[in-house]
Image 1 (tube, one colour):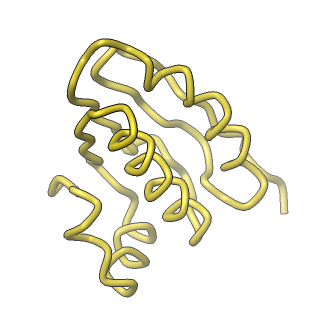
Image 2 (cartoon, rainbow, N blue to C red; image 1 turned 180 degrees about the horizontal axis):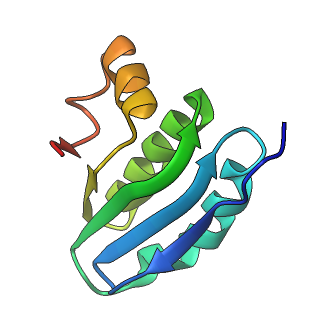
Image 3 (spheres, rainbow, N blue to C red; image 1 turned 135 degrees about the horizontal axis):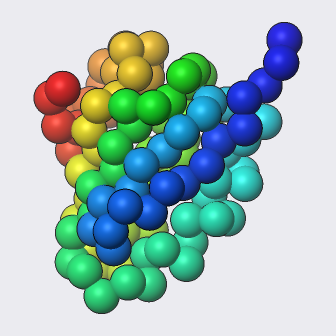
Length: 104
């Protein structure tokens, strides 16, 4: 199975877009790439996942880590347009309310 690389597209300081796949093979690089983005002055960040082609439970782990980083930097964070499989994993784990997932 060929893996699709993932990347963060910074639309504005407040809005990021995620493209590609969120899997065990890609989330570590995304996390490392994103850490500097939490240093912006904005108090709220939105992450749009509408261009994510695939996600497994590693993607959910990344969202949890982003939420932790937001809290550490005194920011709020909202996730929107999650792919169906990621939404299902979040609901199954009972994390959909905790993660501030905005309805599509």
